[in-house]
Amino acid sequence: MAHCAERIEATAEAESRRVSSTQSSWDLESVYREHCAFVWRNARRLGCDEHLADDVVHEVFLVVARRLSEFRHQASVTTWLFAITHRVVQRLFRDRTRRAQRLESYQAELQAERSVLPHARSDAGEYLRHLLAQLNDTQRVIFILSELEGMTSAEIGRSLGVKPATVDSRLRAARTKLSRMIEREHARERSHVR
Image (cartoon, rainbow, N blue to C red; front, side, top):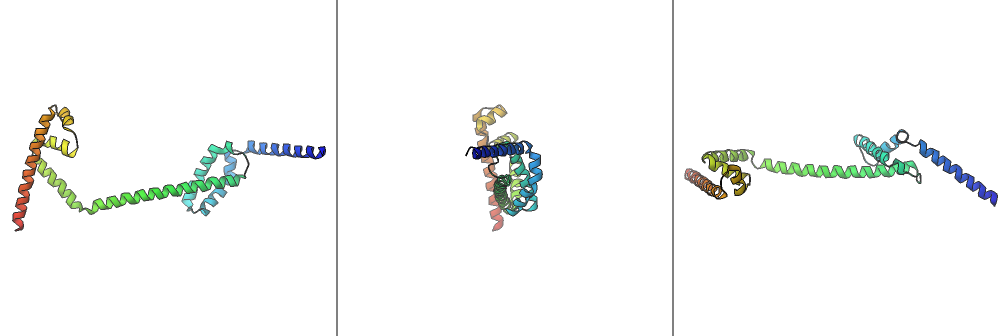
């Protein structure tokens, strides 16, 4: 019985030395050299194209570099690497899907903007510039700052060095003048249609 216990103890000690020596010689470079092809192959098997598989290998070994000291050899290296590879592939696919959805949404918005008669938008801009040119300089500046830039009367007053009440009265005058000009032009258009 004592002989059996000694053998078990010797075997455990030998195993401990083997794991210890394996761990000390186990560095990122050797793990990469031995298992790079394994990671790439399994990235492909998990659905990555060649280009994405290269990215997966890169990401996996970044994780390995950060977590190498935590690996306790409780599972095989390939099991550990496969688990990391699987998580990386899932994350990359999820990120790609989100990016594609955002891009699709952006393109749809852009298309919608473009479909609103591009010439109508540029015509509207020209028309606005035409109307603004009819205002005196002070009214034009106040109208632009208030209506187009969204500044408050107090902010405009501070930037122009006038009282907010003065800003308000000049803004009212600009609005009134613009409304009258627009009404006159609409009346002219209606008379041409008849």
